[in-house]
Length: 99
Ligand SMILES: [Zn+2]
Image 1 (cartoon, helix red, strand yellow):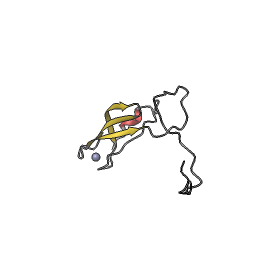
Image 2 (cartoon, helix red, strand yellow):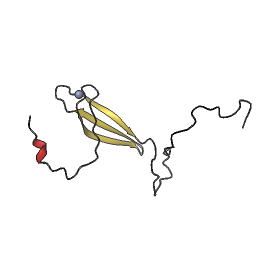
Image 3 (cartoon, protein in one colour):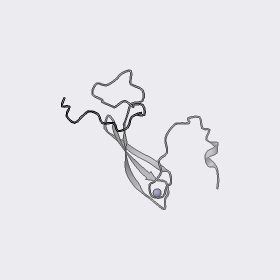
Image 4 (cartoon, protein in one colour):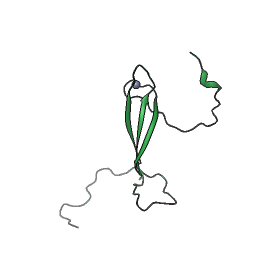
């Protein structure tokens, strides 16, 4: 086993997350992606394991805002992350209360 990648100085240590093949657990390579909506992107992955050869589509969806934008787009509605709820399943209101 060689370490051919070692001579590549990790200058650009991107925080690129790694995706693994759901079948063989090898690393996958993102081949292309398509922005379908402002908060949803489809990414085409290919397994790096030649013996596997799995190719699949994955969805990357914006779920929640952790830090609000300073330049918010009024057409974009992304729920803010809320603190861990301290109360879980309390009855919200008596059944008789209407409105
Ligand atoms: Zn695979």
